[in-house]
Image (tube, rainbow, N blue to C red):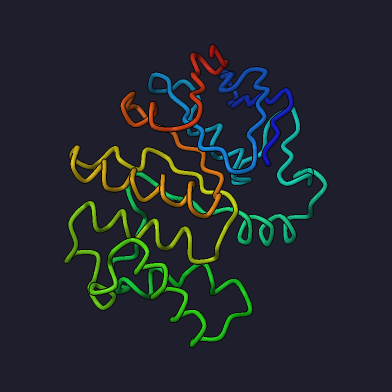
Length: 221
């Protein structure tokens, strides 16, 4: 489903050059649940952004579902990303002025979906994460775990084949973290969603199919 070939990422300023990723080669199978671990600053989030087509590698090739990202125009890249990939972030990235259901609908605003269809799909997604009774609430009225459930609903509303999760349990206590992890495991097992998760939590990582470790931008396991 995802192929990374000789990926390197270099950040340059007028005075310094920083190698964020070095010769990453990684194949992720369709339906796999992969964890990425490593110390802070080792390149985990950079790698996730490259997989998610939010950032370009300095060198190397990203292939998703047999399509090379470098061959897509900016417009086609944005459309491909919107249809194929759902994103979950540690800090939720919800819009405080929108209620729960409007937050979840956001990815469909970039598709040719009617208001009725968007609302039906958002309600279905919120039901999957156990928040059907919270659709009119605002983010400020939710706990951290509930906010992350909303973020998951937003990620899955477009029925993406891939979910990229950056520290999805990092801001939660162990009980809420396990609940969020159970939702991700269910999506992977019941719907075959390919999931790539960055985490600092070894316990969470052990629940996934495979663990990749990074150190100083290089893959060490």
